[in-house]
Length: 374
Image (cartoon, rainbow, N blue to C red; front, side, top):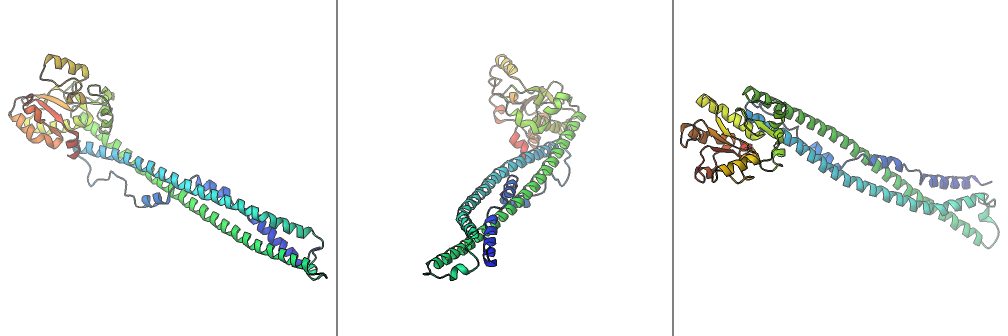
């Protein structure tokens, strides 16, 4: 039977041996699966309030169109930020996983070191001759005693090293697990904030589009079930994806004059311009032509050579041009001069070429860049 001192030594080595393999790797791994980056956490902390807040609500068609587009763009920006943050999170998650893998490798090396110490402790425990301190005081040349003392020193030194390394590994694991949990909590908070922001922006954008549609209907624009989507200014990006003269009916917005239509931003700006024109002259602007599909462009090109753009090149085919009548078609008429002086406030222009080559006082175009600034 071993002495109390030997029993304590074996107990310490055994406890140290079990400690080295009891670290909760699974906990850290599970936490890593749901974390996000610390940098992203600080970015969110400094994020501004949801876009779309106004000092005053929009009142004109142009203001409604502009604010609806602004809210929609904010949604796109928020989604891009989310994608960028997810990429950054992926990089940090990979770095944490690499650290965890290194930690596991260190534990494997620790186990290699622990094995001979455990075997030696077990051997000493099983050797009945190791009773208390008697082996160190037996008669003889002292070689056996010195060997046993050296073995004991080796066990104690090894125990201290292994125990110290095990404690460091456990502390590092706990640090990684805490870091992963904090990152996970920050990521969940960011996603919740972003979702609320996007939801508010979508709601505002939809409200503005509905208000815009109602205002157009009130002005006499015949918007049916198909036309409602065509008058949504947040969809002009779709219109830009189609070739000249091949815009689908679903993205064209009717004008106050029956049978005429343009893409949403041009149609809304024209309707707003028409309000001012009607206030000045007592009647709406007269439209002789607006959007032209490809076949109509070809027909006009062959019927009026020199007075129509090459099919597929006309701004009429983009839903951005109108030909006007009711006096505007007469160069330097009161109506023409008024329109020339006021149209740019609504994004509409009389292009330079139409003053001389060919001379077309009736032709007016919507400039999206100018319209975005008004």
